[in-house]
Image 1: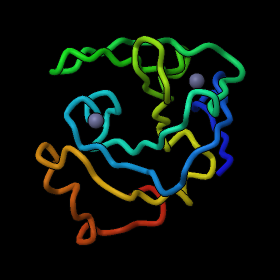
Image 2: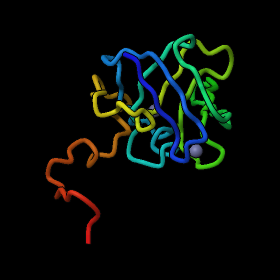
Image 3: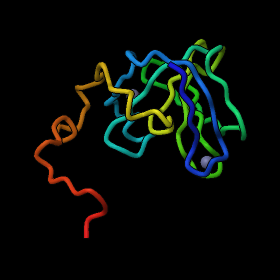
Length: 135
Ligand SMILES: [Zn+2]
Ligand SMILES: [Zn+2]
């Protein structure tokens, strides 16, 4: 599936080819912190199918518990997280689906790192729903 997207301020844009069946929710504590939210939703694009356009992302290198180093690409102007990839010679990019224009069509197929999930984030059905901002 052909997708396109970009950061909030428009500095960074990209196009990619992804498999819409491979959308994953990650509940790991790094994703909670790096996304600034309860969990992160990611879809992978092979290196040769991901093309950055416009500005150049700033890259933060995160070292995992395992010692693996991951590059976290984000917009230096507005801070939107755009992708993660192996720090050296990446073969694929994990795109943050909030940046993808077609995100409503990208339904997650699995959830990982559920042992660190925020329990309330696993079931939001009981939370009152308001169409726009709460008064
Ligand atoms: Zn931006
Ligand atoms: Zn994670």
